Length: 415
Image (cartoon, rainbow, N blue to C red; front, side, top):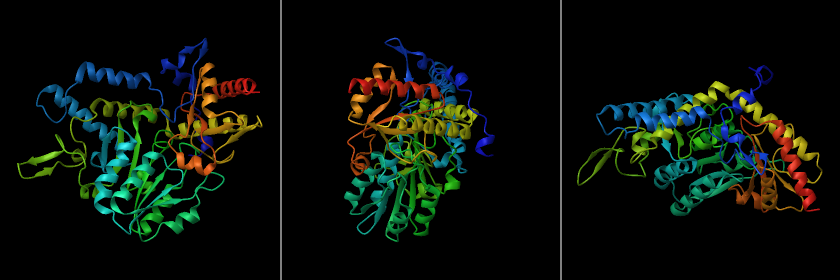
């Protein structure tokens, strides 16, 4: 189905599920444009959390009583639902629940990287990586003697794919790439990068924190070996992340957290591990969060992931058009007309991003300011920080207009 065949979102109906959007600050209604950091949570997901604690709260895989059985079934089925959401045909065995994308990155880096990497091996990343990826692999390479190399970012905010083909070679063991940049909004060609990596017998790790929440992602179609994302960026609760891994790779990996639930048999001399995915979920897991994440997947599928992708891109394109028209705003990332994730990072000339964010807050406009956990990228771009407006299913063009008006107030203040 083409983009023109997709029904537009009924944003007003969607907004009714988010009471927080009706809050006012200083007499101004909240305009929440910090969704790349954390999205708001709809009533039906909040209700799922409340229902769990009111009716089913118990530890999983530990009791024979009714509550434990109910909680265990719901928790296991949540893995199945998440697998379905991202196209993982292996089901729950390929879905590990963590507490966030960062922990998912670290799980692979420690459980796979420490055992498999050594001097002469290379990990290839991009210059637009989030610190969750960049710092993690940087430090693992220091521990193992492997080398980190970085695919360059072009002036238009896209990856230099010629450089990617040059860097990824027979010494490459892992390619770790962000699917959608949380600073530039760039949608990277992860399927093409996977093909390049696999041609050299390397694995590919896809950071899906900014893609899984707002566009259809099929891990088997893109041939990702690993993919990570977080619930709190996709209308779900905080404290829940996901690591997808191909079953045969996860089976070969050793756990890096030890304790209860992840074991099969323990003696004073040695231990053996539980089956997938439980061998990577040591201790009491994120039970309620996992169940609520499954509800968030239902919620997003009910809206339609293609419709969400189109809505976010339309808001981003509209924001670029409005901001560029001001004449004194520099926008980071791909130019107008190129599809991007639902975010726009920018700088107002002569006004630091932190000052701009503070002034916008006076108008109840919530944006992010800083380096967005991409310090090396900001260094490359020659800017200490940037302001970022990011959108989700409940945002409107009228809210973009409110953003532009608030920026004009800041411009006049610093004139």
